[in-house]
Amino acid sequence: MPCGYTLEQVAKHCGVSPETIRKYELNSSRLPLYLIIKLSELYNIQPNSLVSFS
Image (cartoon, rainbow, N blue to C red):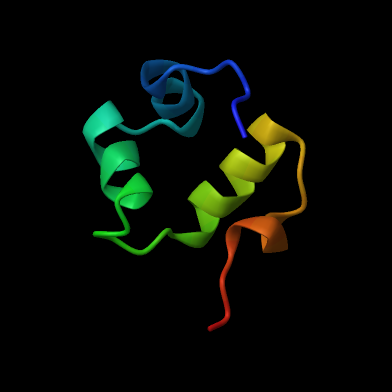
């Protein structure tokens, strides 16, 4: 689902480094709640869309 944001833009919006965002993309780290909220605001989606309960 391309939204037109670069890795750097997403990182800046979230207040973290691009490397941190990349770790979450690769599922090598768990997403903290504050980032779930920031990303849901950026992409204009519900926070539960970013969470897997499996």
